[in-house]
Image (tube, rainbow, N blue to C red; front, top):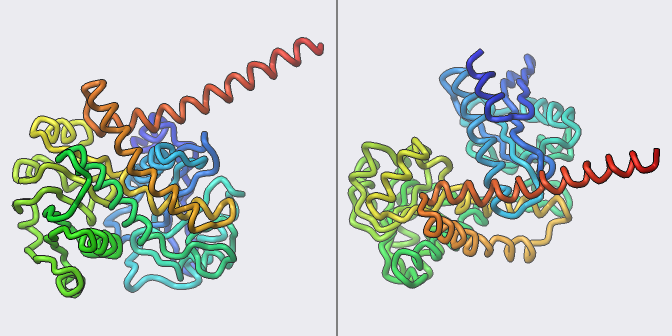
Amino acid sequence: MKLFKEMMNEDFEQVVFCHDKNSGLKAIIAIHDTTLGPALGGCRMWPYDSEEEALVDALRLAKGMTYKNAAAGLNIGGAKTVIIGDPKKDKSEAMFRALGRYIEGLNGRYITAEDVGTTTQDMNEIFMETNFVTGTTDAKGASGNPSPVTALGVYYAMKRTAKEAFGSDSLKDKVISIQGAGNVASGLAKHLHDEGAKIIVTDINQDAIDRMVDNYGATAVKPEDIYDQEADIFAPCALGGILNDDTIPRLKVKAICGSSNNQLLDINKHAEMLKERNIIYAPDFIANAGGVINVADELKGYNSERALEKVKTIYDQIGKVFEISELENITTAKAADRLAEKRIDSMLNVRGNFLHSEKHAVVELV
């Protein structure tokens, strides 16, 4: 099977196909890497056109979580769950409790959280069957909805990106075009509005757009026109793969920094295109790490103040990416990968040295 070969090439540790006939659950749990610790990644629900499409998405997102968690300095690995179904009409308590039993069966190798198409209530239902879930409202010391903290992290990332692009991290009077008006985008818009930025927004949900216009004085444009706006920074906060051959030539911005995952359709090709056009790109898995930083804090007994202090480090992490990019003359996308891989390799070396020393100790004892 071609996909299985791809999994092996990417060194995925485990992929679990979950099916519960009674509840209608069809889900895939992909565990990419546990070098740094148990794998943590959200549970996404989406009406995929095929099981193969769902698997590809699970694998892609799981690997992204490994890099996100490593670059954020967290002692956790990367994984993802995708549920095949329409979150607007296919959800049930039985479905999420069934998923909880599958997660429980992994004995702590995987910890789930809220993601696209799921909510804190869904996490509460998973929590009925397993403790290996974060972002609930029922558990003692839980952190709830991670969206506001994701938005805060993107805001810090955007300020550091502005410093790189304009020489100052002030966003006052800067024009920010935001693609999407969901929870994270709305939270980001609030921070931008409070600092005095000017906001352009688009979304397929007119009610969400209206709230952005009413609350933050945003200017609304049609979804297909967002790439043509004269702005300082473009913030993709909706779908992935939106930076591609068709859209990049249309951009009239100095920088890109947003919350959506996998913004580059082809990581290498389209990162190079942005570099050639002198558009500074803040890699998404660095910029949007606030949510996972927040829920990961639950693993040691949630402390909001501690978690928010950790989220502030996204500013510095983005700075490190820019430094590596300039020093090695590589794209910021490659620089972000280097940052994550360096931490993973460091842990592998530590473990390797430990095992090596243990081996010698045994020989000496014998």
